[in-house]
Length: 270
Image (cartoon, rainbow, N blue to C red; front, side, top):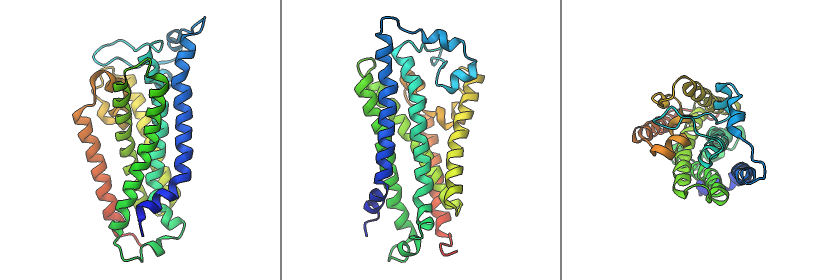
């Protein structure tokens, strides 16, 4: 039995829905910039932004400081618009990854297929590994869809290298949420509990990221929130931090090790 193919087939319908949703969001969000800025009476989004409280700005992906300065990036510029839209696309990618990780093992017990699957002449580890690779590929498809849509409609305003770098950062962060969700599926026996914990972690990362940005402009506390590890504005101006890549690798490794250890001890027949 090819578990990888089985997992990809099982996720195909959901994957298509997520990819289509991501493509539509990115296409409309990024594509709207050219329409609004090329109109006869372009809107001054900076003026609108300045009317909002600082926290609300940050919640919407606005009001971010250019790294190394105390200047906020203008939403009227291509870079500023991209940074704003990136936040919303990233949230979709991260929620998808977290839910996918939480579901990938829990669904076997929920659908009562675990007894059949784990009575095959394979170890539990040999079942988990191809499921992980399938999940990583699913996350890549969703983030890649965002990148393709952004490049298609925003490439004329921004260097493709910047788009590729930020989408790479998005994928690495999505993997962090995926593996955390995977760990939750090994910790909790209920499918809903694992999903709730995984999405809750995304919400916590988002909320803490807003608070950190509201408190300081230097970005020295970025490491405290996965949402800010590869924030688009930081990646665009400074590239991806080697230290934060290492931190993401530690999170992924710890969640992976915990998943294997806990699932080996799981009583699947309770």
